[in-house]
Length: 304
Ligand code: GDP
Image (tube, rainbow, N blue to C red; front, side):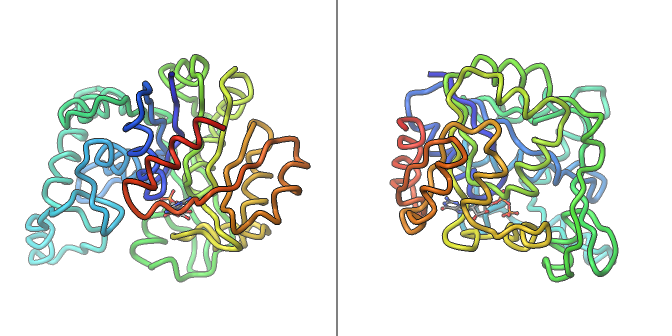
């Protein structure tokens, strides 16, 4: 079975691990909206989280970076008087150095990502959603800033006024992403921030159309329980955009292309409103506290 998983950061990494453990041909299509230039290198947080998760080296404690990584390079930069609010471990930095070198030599982000995942021994494919630079910017009470600056430097504290995906209107999904989605047997929208992880992909030219066009069943696993995300700032962004941050709202955002939504059994009261959108809704335990949950939920997402 060919499975395409649309992925953001932490929640997606858990489901990707679960999917990879099943006997499927997995392709992760990953958000690039949080990519940024930092310390002279090109960081791709979601692409790297996905790759590290699939390589079995992701840090479970932080949700980003490599397990047990050291921070000597960053500590040295701090001693030199540089701002080091964006934490980047030494092994993580090595990955960014290789990617930056390849990009400077003319490689695409897709090629650099493929070189890195092979180097880390990952069998599943990892595809950035686009090779064009798309960045998520947040309009806040302290001015407009890159998502990383809002979430990491400002700790997500400023009031959010709006979210924009810079460059998305003129950016296309890569040919590799197009063909993976169109030839898939299943597309799984991983639990991810609907605004800053899945949103930047849906904003690409023609991307949502691919999801409607594919003959694959498109299934989403909700990142919400009750009226809040399991982690991260998704609730703050959704509220700023006039939505109640719950599984019903996520279902409405994805309803044009979704066939089925997997939500928490605690939200079974939302089942009928979600089904009134014309899609199936199945309830389950959607919390992934460890490898057993990851495997179980991944299997459920493919079975429904
Ligand atoms: P973030 O909002 O910046 O953290 O962006 P991500 O795309 O990394 O979002 C992580 C999403 O995954 C959040 O909306 C969480 O609610 C969700 N999430 C994290 N852990 C779990 C989990 O165990 N199960 C489910 N269903 N969702 C999760």
